Each structure stands twice: as C-alpha cells, then as structure tokens.
Amino acid sequence: MIGIETGWIFSCTGRQPWTIYGYQLTNEAATNSGNLGMLFVLFISLYVVLLVITALVMHFYFYRNPVSKDLHTIS
Image 1 (cartoon, rainbow, N blue to C red):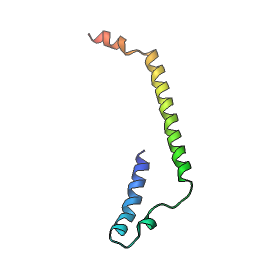
Image 2 (cartoon, rainbow, N blue to C red):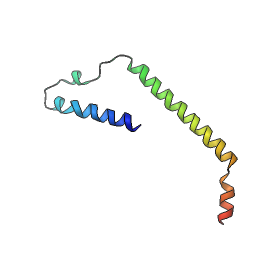
Image 3 (tube, rainbow, N blue to C red):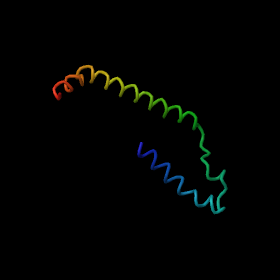
Image 4 (cartoon, helix red, strand yellow):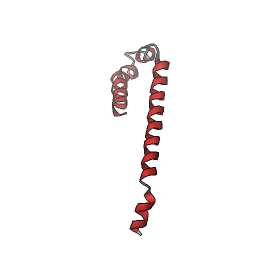
C-alpha cells in the first residue's frame, strides 16, 4: 500500500508543476495507457481476497483462543 501511494505521489508531483505553469496540457499529463479498467478490477479483487482471508484467519484464531478467558483472569 505504501508503494502504491508513494508511486502515485511521485508520478503526480513530477508532472503537476508543468501542468500548472502551462508548459504541459492536462490531456498530456493524464495517463493514456490501455486496460486501466482491467487493472482496477484486478486490484479490487486482490484486496477483496486479502480481506476475506484476513477475516477467516482472525475468525478461526479467536474461535480457538477466545478473549473471554483472558477477561476473566484480569477481573
């Protein structure tokens, strides 16, 4: 996630001053590569899969190690 965000920041800050000062047009600064919709779907599906896996791991972990045992030992 950090890599994605820093890549976006560096790519945008590298071309934004040129666009603001009028040396580059906005349509020249925008990404014009193809298949962006497919990449977006792949990223979303990857994050959904990771979300489901994380939820399952946490569910089975807390099923085997309930928090209620720890709460009763504290009080």
